[in-house]
Amino acid sequence: MVNVELTRLIENMEKVIIGKTDTVKLLIVGLLTNGHILIEDVPGLGKTMLALSLAKSINADFKRIQFTPDLLPTDVTGGFVYSPKTGEFDFRKGPVFTNILLADEINRTTPRTQSALLESMQEYKVSVEGKTFPVPQPFMVVATQNPIEYMGTYPLPEAQIDRFLMKINMGYLRTEEEIKVVSEQKMVHPVEDLKAVMDLDRVLKFQEDVKKIDVSSHILKYIVNMVSATREREDVKLGASPRASISLMKASSAWALLEGRDYVIPDDVVNLLPWVLKHRIILQPRALIAEKTPEFVISELLKQTPIP
Image (cartoon, rainbow, N blue to C red):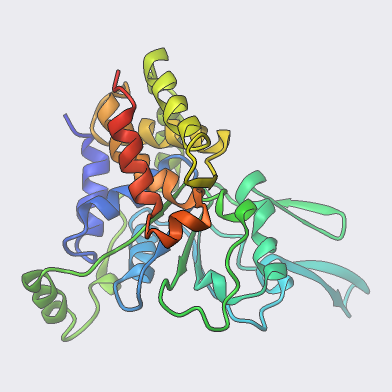
């Protein structure tokens, strides 16, 4: 039996995001695990609206940063500003101090500015000039990037991309779904009228519930076997790290909660495996020449690894 409250959250977001139930659920998995999501897709498919609809549905603070080449680290974290009234330097918080941060086109800014997010994504705090400030809870980064245009972009380093729980995509709508989207925006965008169906305290409670989901030793072994197998293939230059195993375990637990179970089953792992692993696998040059993809490698591993 599916979780009623979380089903209501999904249905509320689908008032804005049409025909993308699985994508909506994957974003909520990120929220339930206090994880971060990277969305890679072409412009105009609703990546921003996906993040905004989640924020409005849980009454969360939402901020958006348009990442550009001239963006500075302090534009993300904030910094100390001199106050004439007190004669002292006061810390002015940047947009990273929010519940849901949309890092739009994150690969268009320099590595120096990209790295300004590293500490907040891993340790949920920001250090500026020797002082540390915690970010609000829950905290989630939803980053987007365009897979087509590479001119003037800076690919995310492996250390940062590994901090994303999952890499997902939106995909195009079917004809009837696109007709519905177009007609509903004739007067006003549906997100403008979207109401909250959950508060942040309830979200934090669900995050604790995810930690209580039972993951059997057989499932844990299956997760580790799948992840470690990516490091043993000849066509893979760099496989997934133990952080991927942890991410897969957490994501599978959150998916089980969405489905109304207090335990993880193999199908939970299988369903989430591509989204958790594909951005963590770097292929050998000869594999790229042969037009192999991380998704192909994952599908091969699924065929070769016995399901418990």
